[in-house]
Amino acid sequence: MFCSHCGAPMAPDAAACAVCGKAATVNASPSVNLDKASLYSADDGGIPDGVKGWSWGAFFLNWIWAIGNRSWIGLLALVPYVGWIMAFWLGFKGREMAWKNKQWDSLEHFNRVQRKWSQWGVGITVGAAIIGILAAIAAPAYQDYTTREHEAQRAAEQAANAAPLAGGSILDSNADNLPTSLRTVAGQLERKTGADGTGALLLDGQALFTGEDARWQFPLRSFTLAGGKEAILIASSGGRGNSCETLFYFLLADASGVTPTPLFGTCAAQGSIAQRGDTITIKLPDVNRASTIVLQNGVVRADGQVVSLTGMNDPSR
Image (cartoon, rainbow, N blue to C red; front, side, top):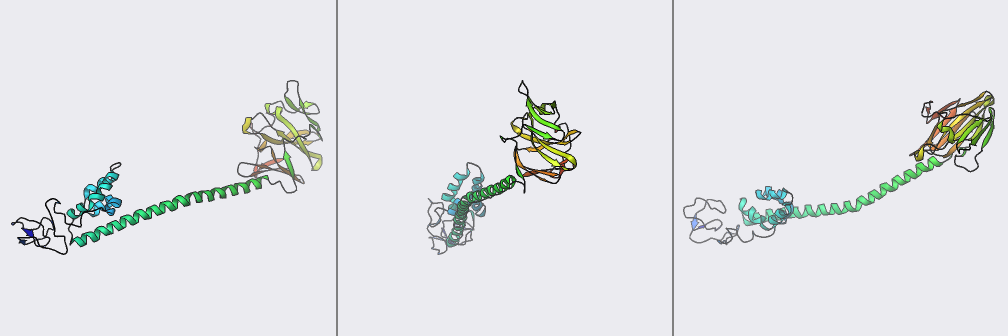
């Protein structure tokens, strides 16, 4: 006997068709139904012609397609390593599973739904591929752009750091023509090297300091201040390893003697220096900017902050 709706074989006493699920009367021979395929065989398990075939929707959307089509075994596509195997298996067998696991109005209805699944699967995959290609092209271009921007900004900062003070002059503690001695209001200031190769800064023949830092100190230049006073810039270039090339300090001199300021600087040996009245300004390059040191009224300020004398920046230590 055969179902009058889909033509599938069915038992004479069955209340509903096992294939289409509809209550049906039975006929002695299979009927032809234009909505569902009418040709079945025992070999295809009740699968009509037009159902079998590759499913791009099941392949590309795999576990999503499996939920939508009640093919729960397709959730194995979420399992690592097994996922790709299951995706191919769904591509080959998905349409048959979907036909068995859902109620369809007709073969045309089934194919229409599966065609939409395939369109969405192909569309999403192609769209993702296009986005990936665009991202692969755009990411290096954006990285190159940001790199050029950073380099331009760094070059601008370096140029600003290297620019000397207006009306000033270059300060270079490594220059070849540095003075070995200076005549100051407090006496003759000079650097001497002993027989053992160690250096010392002398004022009228007497060592100013005897600490470790004194071995590396030497005068750079003198600045005349009001009231018969002077400010002598001293460099200290050594004894700190490669991490810090040079620091500076001032000797504030008058007829009674000299008084040192704290050591200051960015460890850079070159910069620029300018004097306006009794104010002396030094500009030194730093890592990402320029540092400005100002001597005024005997007080040293670095970037606006007073440099106080401590055990770490005492030139007599």
